[in-house]
Length: 192
Image 1 (tube, rainbow, N blue to C red):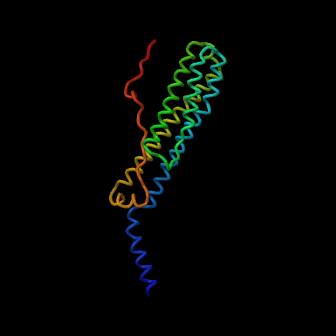
Image 2 (image 1 turned 90 degrees about the vertical axis):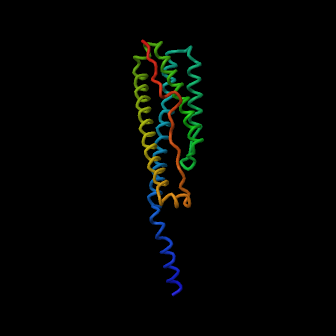
Image 3 (image 1 turned 180 degrees about the horizontal axis):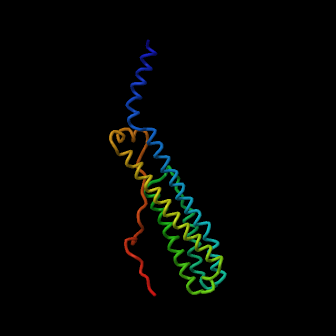
């Protein structure tokens, strides 16, 4: 009889926990981790393309070494900062994003160098790399959008009542979102 009462008490204790949607929180947390991995994957793809792009441009321009150095250093910095999905905090995401933004700026400088080399702009290898880089930037945007949606879904779930009561007990804490880089609200100036 005592065993039965123990089992009954365990069942009674577990029943309220089913209303906290523990399993759905685990699913949502895994979704955040999966979408974060995709963001990292796309940034890695971009980092892998950069040496080929730099070498192609280098073949045409020998006196732009400062630009090449900036791109190489920015790439090294961006690839050295990684975040484990378990360590997604505001500070870590800001450091990661700052390094990625620095690399984006360096790439813009590299692509601007190509304006001085008409033969380079017509080079098939360069055109292919530029297309791949553009596609990668679009994939990064898509991966970040999916991550943002996943984080919104997860953060909303852990803040809803009654789940908010239980979420902290099980270690579910809010995940950080991407923020627009400084000056993103201003349209770029185009000159002809």
